[in-house]
Length: 283
Image (cartoon, rainbow, N blue to C red; front, side, top):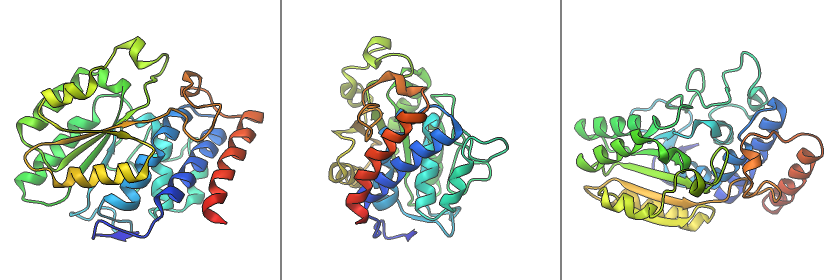
């Protein structure tokens, strides 16, 4: 995958379907958590990597590459799967996810994994580092952009709001945040934990350019990220309204699948649904 034009030929709907299938397989094989969290971001990941970001998988550390940080590090399976499908390493290596001694840890890790910019897991850290990357790029007159994907539950963290203030103060127009607003966090709905609403208004009051979209609609995602690249003197946030567990009917909108691992009949049922979706793009 080489796309310094900011465009490429990857079908993002197909990429999202492939990543969802990998996420279910990876969490099944490793008996790991966070399948629901991974499934909710597959469309965001597919559009960013398949269409928006300027990247070269043959040169993952190119100085002019766009940067991506998954701040909600527990959804790391979706990042690994996206990178594999985009040519950073073989999809066969995804079988090592969550295995003893593997570089593909449950929470995303940059160590030994080409294309991962930052190891994350403790929530509320990714945006702070992203702000640093964006500020450094501006000071060095670099043209690349930094993208940070937050979870909605992660927006309970005060460190994020400090970073949000910082980004607006420094007019980091090369920084774009996507919020995976699936409205369910680890043990309960977001609204029952610490309510975020009026969520968009908070970002506006902090001085950000805001967009509120369907986080599974690829046209809306593409347009929103492209719009964000045109904004000057303000950082941008795209609030992506998503469904936790998207793509597997019995996982959707269920807090159970934050920690539950797909096994047995549940795994087979999930695979059957996802294979039907994949067949639309591969036949």
